Each structure stands twice: as structure tokens, then as C-alpha cells.
Length: 410
Image: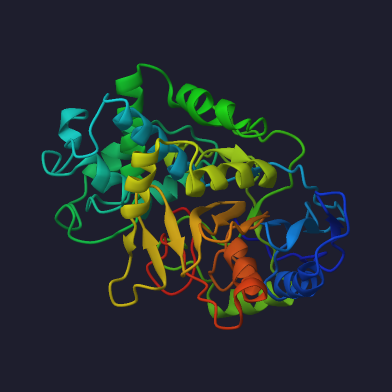
């Protein structure tokens, strides 16, 4: 994510809107539009696509800003985005489907399926899916990050990623606490392939994409770093090495980025292979809305297994249980929305649905983190929530972030 000190043009104020129902746009759109435009301008977010489906207040899909920095290239509602860690929900969903079919058990130890895992005889598949394994997150390895910076097109294999993780000591005993680790979901992808005897992309297609009619969602081959058209260019500040410990820019770069004189690097064609089954899927806001409703309300699992997923959600921080929770490939954001988010160099996406009201919100942007280090899509979601839940709505936080702000897939 090479940073260049050239001018930054953000066309956040010239957003166009589309009402997917074909009728007059809902009243809340007039409230949300200026909020979104201001947040994009204040946080140097180039472009965004926002979808809201409300059984009570109506549906609204809108585009904002530009798909290419320095040019007026309007975003479109059909734009494809790398969806980062939202991929994790797909990996865990297939795992749970295999469990309900009796082909594996969520309480099975990972050692039953994959050798060489530290504490593998004690870590269950469920603990991997719930981010409570204690396994080291390979993306925190400095040499790995330096290698990605040096060769963004390098194609990584799952075994290379696991070897990096397993070379480090475990962080804690299995089940002791929550800690977000991409290693967990890379491992689960390997388990799926071993049990099904087919590429995980085929399982995604047969078990999720086809049944839900997700015609614009894909899990590309590791060697494929392209994005289907239409798609915006994707941007990110900093480098993999510089963002290991903090996602915020240093003070001098922060000021320059917010002033528009520091431009993020273009990550559109960087290989996502280092994220694999933890973050390499591609989708559109329309497909993500369909998917997150099935994830939260049912349609991918049988009734009993769906309840198992809901019951698995535990606070990520026991000292602040209302802020966020994590379960079997699903996040609770604040007190209302369930779903997940995903960030990968170039893009960030958020998908959430309220199990009580049915309110569904999907946001996709073409910037990873904003200059202050928070996830770009979450910046917009936090600004939108009061329109539906009041001024005191708990915004939740990204489970990938150890601190109070949001962060990348990493």
C-alpha cells in the first residue's frame, strides 16, 4: 500500500441515488444523504454504495462519490467489491452445513482433520469459527507483511499461511478468550476441502451462491486478482508493515490525508490470495443484502443449526458486553444488527440485519481504512444508525480491531 504525496480528489458531494422499489424514496433518505456525504468528505472516502431495506420505512439504494480518484467516475449500484472478512461467514456456514449433515462435528478437534496445529488436540472446529482458538494470526508476522508489500501479486497458498502462523507460539489456551485471527478461517477452509473432496469455491457455489441466487458473488481462484466489471478502483493508506500495530496514519500523514494532499495507494489488482477463505470473496450490495438476510434470519441452515449459530454469540469484550459479540461466523454490532464486515486493501464492506425489525443495511466503499484508522464502511454505518435507532444507538465495533475503532480484515 504505497503512499504517494499527490493531490486527492474526493467527489463525495455529487452522489446519485436509486430507489430499488421504483417508487418515491423513503423519508429517511433525506436525512441520511447529507450525513453520508459529510462523513465521506471529512474522512477522505472516495466512493460508496449504500443499501437500506426497511420493512417499516421502505427501501433505498444510493451511490456516492467516485470510483477513481481525481476523476468523476460515478459509483454504480451494480459495482463489485472485494468483501474481505464477510467471506468468513461463508466458510463457517459451509462448515455448519457439513455438521448438520453429520460429515463432521463442531466439537471435533482440529487435529482430527489437519496435522501440525499447535494445541490441535484441544482446539475444536467451533472455537476456530468463534475466534477463540488462541492461534497466532499470520497477518501480524512482520516478514509476511514485508513480503506482501514487496510483491503484491504473489500468490499465497493456505499451507504457506498456516506455516507462518504455526511458527509462532499460541496466544492463549483454547476457549480462554476472544481474539480475531485469520488463521482460524484459513484452517476451516482446509477442513472443508478435505471433507468435501472439492475446492471450497465449488462448495460456496453449490451451497450458498446458487441456492440464494447470488449471481454477482464469487470466490475467485487464488491466481485470479481481477474483479468483475463494473467495479471501482480500490485504495488504501499505508503499507502492510506500517499498519501491523496501528491502522491510523502518523500525525503528519494524517493531516495531509485529511487535507487532501496525501493520496492512498491503488490496491485494485493486488492479489487477495493471502486472505483465502478468510477474505477473498467478491460481491455486490444487492447480493450481500440477500445473503445477510439468510445469514441472520435463516435459509442457509436448518432451524436447529441456525439457533446454534445465534446462541453462539458471546461478547468480544466481557467488560463491555453491549458493544459487540462474535459467534459461529457472525457478528453482533451493538444491540441491533447481526452480520459481519470485511476489509481488505482497497475496499471495505459492511452487512447487517436486525433480527427483530428486519432492517438491513449494506455499505460498500473503495477505501480500506480512513486516515484515522477506522474502517471506512463502519464510519458511514455509525453515522446512519441514529436515523433508525435514535441518538443513543450503540454503533458496535469491528471485531477485527483490538481497540475502540474499526480495522481491516487483518
